[in-house]
Every structure is written in C-alpha cells, then in structure tokens.
Image 1 (cartoon, rainbow, N blue to C red):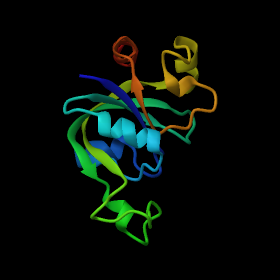
Image 2: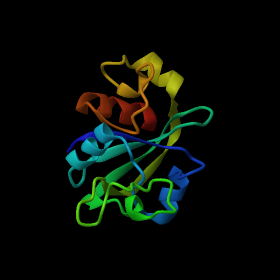
Image 3: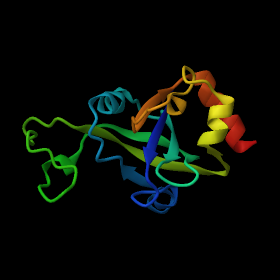
Image 4: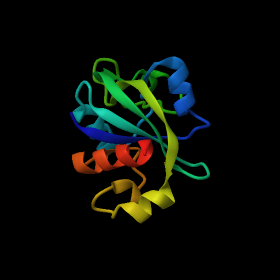
Length: 151
C-alpha cells in the first residue's frame, strides 16, 4: 500500500462531496506527471484529500483507491473544461482512478502546519511553487500525517 496526496478546490469537489457520494472518479487532471502518478496507483492505496485554493488550504481527510486505470471521460466532452481535442476513445491520453471516502479529519492539517512539520523533500506539497494536483507521499510521512490528523 502506498500513500498519495490529491488536491481539489472545495468549491469544485470537497471532502463533504466525497463523503456524500461515497465513491467518485477523480477526473480532470491535465498534467502529465500527475497523470503518471494516477496510473501508478494500486487498489487500496490511501490518498490524503487536500483542499486547495481556500483559506486555509490543507489536508482535510482520507480516501482510498477503489479502481485503477480508468479512462477519464471528460477528455472527450467538447463542452467540458477538461476536453482534449488530441484525445480519442480509441487512443485516450488521460487516465485516472476512482476513490472512496474513508474519513474527514477532526483537525485539518493546514498548509502552514505542514510547512512547520515537514521539509520539501519529505512532503512535496510544501515545496515552493509546487502546483501538482497528485503527488506521492513517503510511507513514513503518510504515517506521521495520519497520526497528526487523528491526534
């Protein structure tokens, strides 16, 4: 089992939305490195749900990967902001995963708190200028994050 961190703006899709839905397709990722991380995920991997572009940004919950290597259908929908005209159903360019809700943390971990606790080599989300929406988390860092969030 691996750990990941996945970002979403709460006005687009929040931890509350995931709790309501139970399972969702993590669509709309349009960065090749983030896509490659998505295709590296395995069933039962855990992902920290990070609310971005909000005050304060931070880790608010936990989800698990319940389905892997899913074709992202938004790439084919011309009216969708994530439409990719270079992609086709015969040769899709964007793959993703389905995630399932596990928990909302009683004490969200703000970006400021993460910066005080972890260095940029340990946790990529604290790197200056990091804009990736999906990133790996080292196992020992994942364990520490869980302890902090549940503590």
